[in-house]
Image (tube, rainbow, N blue to C red; front, side):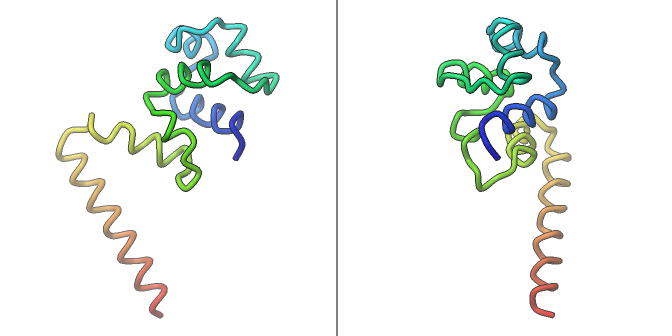
Length: 105
């Protein structure tokens, strides 16, 4: 997934319109529009501003070992109530165990 595709995915996951993303990132609407709709590759400072708007780090943005969906979820984990965190961990553990069992079969 290239940089523009990741930006578009994080925008969708964040449920931010171009105007909202521009406001939250401190960028102009035309800058965000050109990136999202015309595939204009942003400079690093612009990308950093977009990451702040998405509540992720640049490192998380560029971590291709994780899909944007996983990065998005994990970036919000600390803000969840402890019950939701516990339920999430239990579900992940269950998925890992199920996958191990399928591999062993």
